[in-house]
Length: 525
Image (cartoon, rainbow, N blue to C red; front, top):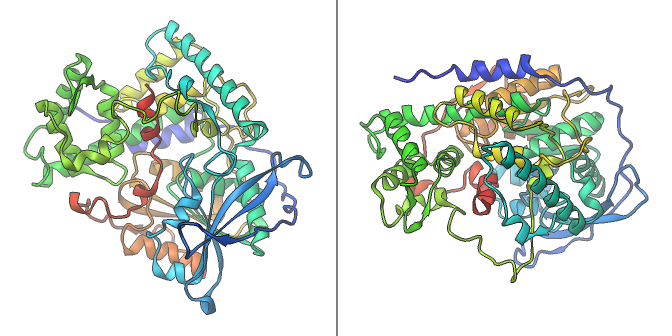
């Protein structure tokens, strides 16, 4: 039986010892955003909500300079007499529309919607807020993100530079200011425009980084920050890649254990790891095809991506059925597998002639994280170490793509990694799943250590990405904090809720509203 590395210990060791970046300088309270207003009108397709725009500086270091318009949406509190204020949302991604998130919101509790105006915005570079624009023809040249030689490394470096230059030219000056610090300053401008003295904020996934930056910049303007499924912005290249591999492997380990005890799992009673290894080996030989597309062979990375994506909800019933179908060479995919197959069809949905531009949200990531890799030899070393940590999953396909796409970004980036410096804020609530494949528990634990006494960490003992909505324990704890500023007791752990059945998997869950970067990436390589 294959031995697996104790993954949480590995991840924590990587974070605490390998490559902690130097602390940022002492945090000074940032100046207040200039006075601004939002002109609200009824949203065209959502008459129950209001939509508007807010002008903010392209460059917050030049507050009197050119501006962009942020798209904003608001759903009024359902009980005006009980209204506390505005709750500003950031649903993460990077690249998810906060306007769409707020308008389609059916995941938050009735009590939260009763007490707050729910406010979403499209972060700069996203949606209707001066989106990043890139040549579709160039994006469709996306090389294989698994680099196999120095020549491929050099080709990727050249492609990354050309893609960045193209996106920068098409997007305009805001491209140089799409980082999470600028987004945090935008949130403060929204706060001011809403007439709120202090911010009440819920950030999910990549939105936690924006919330962390807000707490650094504006500790005295925080009422409550709930940070759900946290990033760790202190990590360099190796610790980031290795910990992410550990999280993906941990999620796969949980799938194997679940399938061993769940009789309705399509792989129940089988040696799941042996089945998985054989399937990946067949993919390496070109023997696995997308169901219904015999001309579309699936690579090892494609199959791993399905398992990684399945960990988000988790959709493990669907994953087991899909793996069985792949192994059998099924002509049609299982009906339950549509979401897992996602965007990996034999199409990107548009031609370069019909639509010459497309948004590339991963450029936002490159403004916040610099992962310098000198050459293929160093890249291959990272790959070997990641595979030693994650023998079943290897290095996460999404992290391969992020590593490659950001190769061509020059130093310094707008928001380089650093240890968090949060001083003088009210308590912040950090929430994380114990078996999150995308933003693993070790990242939240380490972010809480960096924040110090201002942080309170709530542990959800289950699976999936995004905690709010996963059972009464976690949901009520977040609600109590946002509404009454009541923190859960230190060390609070909320029990896991059952893995959703296939007929329930389409019900709103935290991860169902997220933008999984692998969905965007899959058609382009």
